[in-house]
Length: 345
Image 1: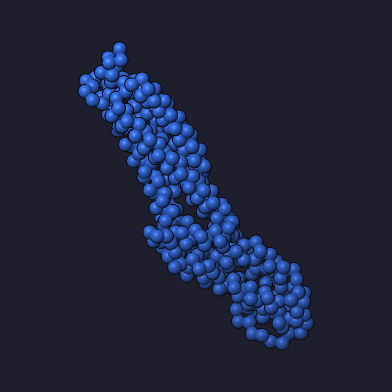
Image 2: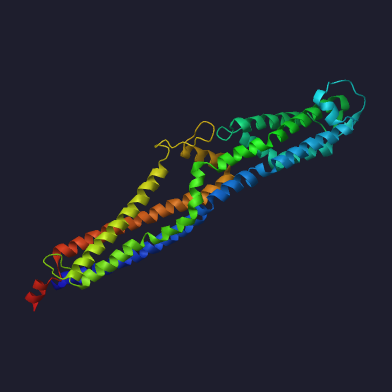
């Protein structure tokens, strides 16, 4: 029995070391997942507004229209008066519109080119955005026909077309903003508005720590599950089992939920706000491949952190099982029960 008591004591210490190591791993994992988790709604807004350029749609569309109007003045044409009903007619002379053409090119380089890509996207290109994509596409087609120096008869028609397309895009700004707000306010994103409560994730492993404290108390009182009449031993055993069950249930929930998220495509979880109702996994893969700047800001650290958190929870789940097995062995083998101690003495 001396050997069994020594082994039992050593195993209790091993359980404590495992629990302490597991809690530390879990804390590191949560500290990595919380920031991207809490910042996800803000990062989604920044991704659409700053990285994809929708915050600059009105500004750059107006720049395009103003540049086209300025280019037309070089051939003595008033855009607001002539363009709505412009008819191509022979006009003498030519104009150098390199500055205006470059300004339009720069506007597309700043935001409109990216907006065109998003608005014409297979998932993000919903009805409202596709109208904007057509207007921006017409401008890029007209740009391809421009040279720095052209005859007024040719350049007037092109710049009038650009002017009108710019006005069309400007008229759609509010509708585009409403559509982007719909993306940002989707139910999948709104869940993360409650991220302030996610700090409670830190307390989950302490159910296991508390259960270990009660197990240690039970061990110190002899660890005898049979025939023990001491109320304190019975209470500590019950409390140990209760907290261990809670810890086991919590870690199991995290691991199962994490696996469910990882297999969201198999579960056919669709994002209905987008064109084609893609699954979550399809959408994430598409963003990573086609919009890496948004992926890096919004999802990269979040996905890695989530994977680490689920992994840390799986480690704690395994430790729960080890502690459970140790407690069962302690009860069954009873290395500290009174009868064995009397026999040795």
